[in-house]
Length: 124
Image (cartoon, rainbow, N blue to C red; front, side):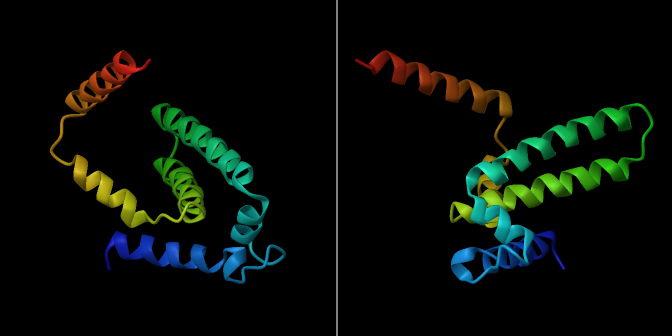
């Protein structure tokens, strides 16, 4: 079983919990988040990202690495809720990561800056 299969299964469950697909906000955490709208799940993503940073800092000081894995799982989960809300899937993210494969991050960042600079120069 691949990790991609696990992500696809979780994405399907999240999709099924959308209020538009019959998800009940009174019975499902995902449905409740989606029902409340982007502010609710985006706030959770911010909270989870902070918890990832704190867990990583704790690992730097000898804490169990499983806490970091736990927090990253929470971050990924809430990010998947956001993807579902916007009609996207983990496969879309994997496709983007594959597109970047073999590309130097430094070169890619320099290219983005050059494109932005060109756009600014062309702006009226």
